[in-house]
Amino acid sequence: MTLPRLPRHAAYVHFSNPRRRNALSLQVLRSLQDQLIAHNTSPATGQRLFLPPFKPPMLTQLEQASNSKHIQDTSYAWLVSARAWARDRAGLPNVLVLASPNDSPERAPVFSSGHDLSELRTLSPSDVRDTFRLCAEVMSLIRRSPALVVGRIHGLATAAGCQLALSTDLPIAHAAATNFQLPGAALGLPCTSPATAVSRRLGNGRAFRMLALAETVPAADLADAGVCLVSGGADGDPAAQRDALDTEVLRTVERLAQMPAQQNAMGKWAFWTQAGLHGQDYGLRDGGPTEDPRLGSGADGYEDAVDWAGRVMALHARSEDAREGFDAFAHKRKPVWLCLGGAAADPGQDTSG
Image (cartoon, rainbow, N blue to C red):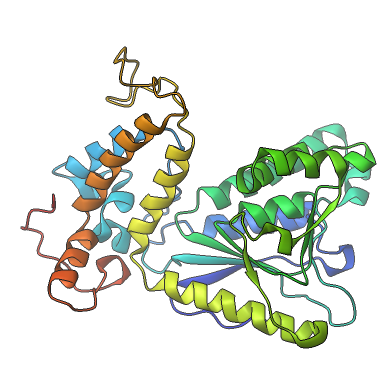
């Protein structure tokens, strides 16, 4: 099966292991790792351009980069400046689509059956550790990719395959053709690592039930959990289901590809960082320890999160593309995003909003 052609600024991250039901063998994991790194390595500088750690104090470093007179020379300039993004990420995709191209019309589709258990049985203990370490790194690379990752999920996604599917930023699945499962407990190997992604996507209660019971969960049951569900395909026709899925994937990718990628990347980092604020003392003011009673005192962390996110909004507003968006709105015209290669804004203008 051939995957549909993607629009400009988008690229596939693909994997294929049809003989093993798309199992995540060492070879497959290394291929995914290589692709994710290649799609986020600057052709101009060779620098790997991944999001910073999802830690609130990192915001201070980003603010300092934005305020620097030499912003274009700072390590995270590409994340806070549309001009630097266009320079450092020229030629790189702004949207990635995780997909497997080998759906078979002769049998039920499988997105991924997880780790290759036959391979694991033959590995030494150190190689087994390396396999799980590599798998964790692949999931982290997806999470830290500044290019948003759309998941094209068709068929069974089980164990680490379930983790892979639900680690994507925007998973899209066919409601009638896709199932999720954490089967490890039934084999004496609970899916502890896959449950990290599942719990963050589906919530602790639902994820633990999947972990403990090892039951299959239809995609249709996850409509309220951030998984975009696609219908279509008369009488369960696999080809029609794939077409319906690809139509929604392309619609999503085309919309993302037209949006300001630098601001979306900053938004992705900020969203997952604030989601981790739960009232602890993070030293949000200056990146270091603090006794400020306003910090870490908000029970569920809402006050801390909204205060921290206000600083992010101010940082958003300093970007050249934010100014372009403001101007386009005021003049009722379509914005031309600098990060996508549009005309450069006047560098002499104040960008503070």
